Image 1 (cartoon, one colour):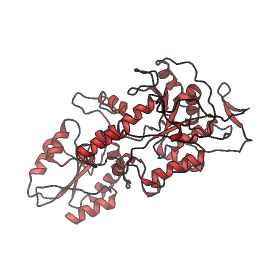
Image 2 (cartoon, helix red, strand yellow):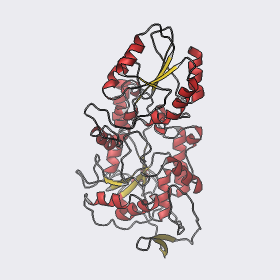
Image 3 (cartoon, helix red, strand yellow):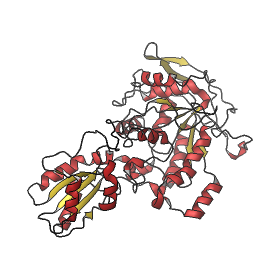
Length: 469
């Protein structure tokens, strides 16, 4: 399998890239010339480097022996320098602290410098194409791999081809085991994940192929960001010893995980992509933000968090496929999701949301009484929420505005915190599926009506209420 590298180099201006201020002054250098960091001076100096292109003897990302290399055409490659000596695991905590305020470009350069041929970028076919652009800008050779689950959108496959041509690289694709996929589909059907969760399918189609890929590496680079997913990614460092997967040397601590854009917000990633004229997946123009397999990905609507487009039928806290399950494992030990101290009952001390004088906070007893009433003096609309849920946080403004508009109209607006020890009750008695769930309690009916739409803007909520009151 070919080593995926950029076939040309690029120069970078002396200005340090800041995620919040994507400004660049790029000039095309002579062939075989690029600029590298001089960290001692905090500046970027020019150095001439002559590259030789030859067939690579480096192991492919899947590290399989006796592989027939004729199956995959060899790409033109640039030979990377030998990896430096192995750094002890405890060094990476300190390194992460030192790079906490570094730009993604500097972090990427550090990662490629340290691990050479033994590191690769994990590319999903979404906005994480920014990682490839950063790697390209360093002027260093780099490898890219991707997991082809067999169920990606056609637009994603087309995007893979565009990226390969744009950067002059070959993406190293990993595929699920055909026997495992066959057994899963024959026993449970093509869409079992809608009934019993996505974890089993993801384990077969994504996690196990990833495990094979990482066994051929000593480090990998991901596009995880702290603002991507409620709770599960809020504490990720820019570099860490991988808590779940093993690398080439085997055993715990044998793999290092780099997250160069951990501290960058999504809008800054997009500012960077536009500034650098980087190709993007055409699904983004159709409302898709987080992109995965076709059956489990959809576009998001105004007021929704980007991860709501993934596995929308499941709980907001379960929106990881297993590739980064170390985040979930960390979360299990800290129910506060990085926002506050956890209580023993599974709730936390996060700052409450949906705070307004026109909103009624319902206790367990209060909502039980509301649900039992058959003849109410006035109708109610109530949101079942969890303050740590970013999907709930995303609709806070529109719900408060709704409460202000309905003040004095004869419709009461309430909220009920349904996580922790209240969650089972809410699931059994209040139709809670995932957070947030919105219920309308009509004036002359005891049965609440669940808001069916994912649109949570004020106008959509008002239309729902006006149709029922």
